[in-house]
Amino acid sequence: MELTGALAGLTLALRDARLIALTGSVTGIAAALSMAASSYLSTKSDDTAKNPLKAATYTGVAYIITVMILILPYLLLSNYFVSLGCTLAAALAIIALFNYYISVAKSEPFKGRFFEMAGLSLGVASFSFLVGLVMRVLFGVEV
Image 1 (cartoon, rainbow, N blue to C red):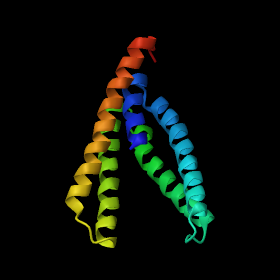
Image 2: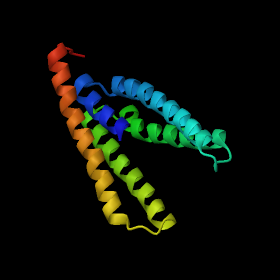
Image 3: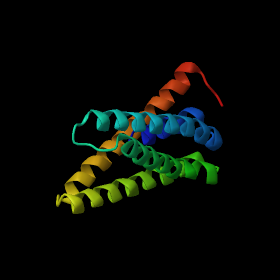
Image 4: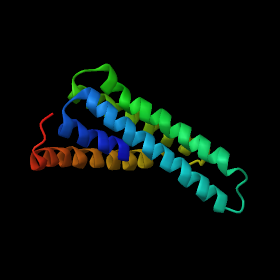
């Protein structure tokens, strides 16, 4: 959710697909490493967990793959608004896949969880998009 929001904000703030990809990649990789470290520490503190390094690796790799998928439109397309649309569609697909897995694994309903997560993700992206506009105007940045 946070990377999708960051990309939405960067889209309006920077208005350059390659610069957005660069900035989003740095942000995403830093977030992936942070998530992996948090997973390691969380798993290590859990008495029933067996391998914190394995959990951290899975978390980090999954996050890096997600980052690559979300950044890819900005690398392939020059129109940053079209790139944002593709990124949001990819984020919704990732949310759908994740929720499908959870609904099957835990025998929980898919629809409610999906719409809740999708709504939160799109809400964060929308708000971040506006923040990007405000920050660009406030700081007088023209790229």
